[in-house]
Length: 383
Length: 46
Image (cartoon, rainbow over all chains, first blue to last red; front, side, top):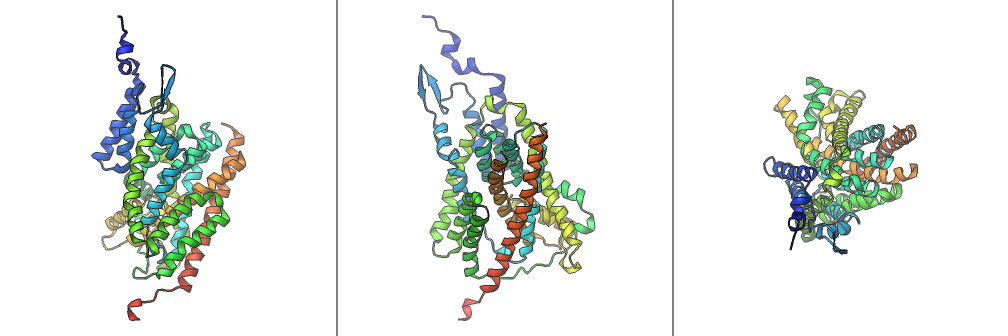
């Protein structure tokens, strides 16, 4: 009766340094979630999932044992929720139900920053092609700059499945690092006097219920007409918002915001982790993607700030925009708005930028979804 | 680096940035329009 060590302890025998690196990555994500509270709802499940899938012969992943295929639970979840894009789209219903679009009505022109601050996505896409990534991979890497996890997952899932784990980790980690990434970029591009600009907003402006109900419907129709490829993304977002604003589905709205959002988030995080295996993750490409992801965030921020400075050249003094607000055109809501509000208060304790920052940030949420849809439409056209 | 892919990326970027601005401009007019046609009325006064 001679058994080899490999037969008795296959996991220990099969463990490589790459597996250990991934288990360390998982522990780091859990540390960031618990200790630093960086996007804990996603980083914790992803971290734990990364540990789960990095044991050789882990039962959570599909294994072939004695010629028989034993399907792993995480593979089942992946096929059901990520490969079909169901989980990210369900998250969009929850996000839509959480968003109040009424701040946009206070100064609708701030919506344009939701376009300007997507600049980094395209810059990064171009840069990624320099490093030898294919067009589809480059687009998937660029979308990290949207600061929008579900959109990143959908684009990467369609264009670059192999890069999905690195892209989702980068997207969610950098969303959490907005307070660290944005302030130095903003300070570099603005003068002290620009950072002190006070913005005129109609904070007391009220919006009719009819307007708030019509808004998601009209936006969906427009998106369907102009870019039908964005309709899954924007349609689910607006569906969630319609549930919120219609006024007759309060129970469903609450469920979408809480139970649906929480349930899908738990499954989304741990399911993404099913792709964080050592074989796929411990590669030079992963480091490059993480680096390019920061580049995307930096240039998104710069795009928003510089566009505000450009607009100020044409605006009357009383209508000038604080360039810091331009940086809120990314999708990290409400994190980015809070950061800018805090920076404004540091420069001038009586300058409250929260409302314009929130308006811009809401525009950024729409902008990132639109860009995701556009990439899904444009990239295949260019092959 | 593949020049052909780089060119395509640049073209997509140009079209993409222009289109997202067009989208936002359209949404701007939608917001201004529906806000004008359906202004807020204080229902407590009824």
